[in-house]
Amino acid sequence: MLVDMDHFYAACEEIRRPELKGKPVVVGWDPKEGSGRGVVMTCNYEARKYGIRSGMAISKAYKLKPDAIYLPVDFDYYEEKSREVMAILRSKAEDVEQVSIDEAFLDLSGKLHGYEDSLRYAVKLKKEIAAKALLPCSIGIGPNKLIAKMACEEAKPDGIRLVRQEEARDFIKNMPVGNLYGVGRKIGEQLEQIGYRTIGDLAEANIMDLMDRFGSYGIELHNYANAIDESSVHENSEIKSIGRERTFGADTLDEKEIGNAILELSREVIGEVSKAGAVFKTVTLKLRYHDFTEHLKSRSIKPTGSLESLVQNAMQLYRQNPEKAKRIRKIGVRVSGLSDYKKQKKLF
Ligand SMILES: [Mg+2]
Image (tube, protein in one colour):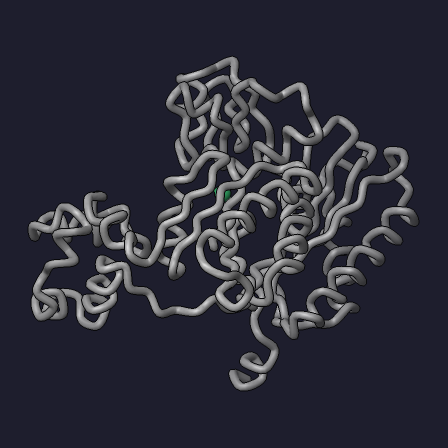
């Protein structure tokens, strides 16, 4: 089963600002009345009606719908909501593989009795996520990860789609080859050029031809096109960054209060880092001022897992705060460039 949250960042924003419901919402960089740089991170379905898409230049989105509601990205909040959702999923299945902030595979093969059972299960799960995390999602169910993922695409938004083993090949065969899971745009174009327009075309391809062109990836492509995917659902240990933030009770300039916050946040971050058995090589400090403007500053350091090093670097970043007179509303400490401690040791 693949559970994928619908227009996740926009949906998170709708929780804390219910007045946004039903209006076009775009989360991303500041459009600056059409002159802004950067992209749309996500948008809700109302915004999609105007042709806005995630990944699109924010200036283009602004041209399409200048009076949409444009919101800045607040990763810490979305990560908090993501943790809520993932906790629900982990309480439901033994094997959960988180693939992104808002998406996870669940292996339910040992838990359910047949596909009808899985459908009932998905309905319940969807309701539980809506009730507890206040977020909509779509669910795809299939005999393997590939089909679950592609079923989920068809289920969006806010739906459930079940594809049984015996239906799997027919389900994908008329789709354009670029829709096949794991096929990027470039490979998709190459496949089309050599005459495989649909997934069905690829399924019937001569395996030798595919291997000549793509090596062992050709075998994988051929398997996928035939709805075969043997990969298992496994807990993914690759965490990209770990961060914590805090909003002060009252906006502050008090160095002691800020210093204490940095220390506490760093402790929480290091707790997570050591749980993950990781080291980090980038430290980021985020300041949000009373007027909601933000200052973000990062520095690279030698890979470490030490609390002292994190606190020291975060403090130094704080001293470089360019807006010394502005009261601080919120502060965040984040580490990234994480890697496995044992691998690091080997490297050294
Ligand atoms: Mg999603």
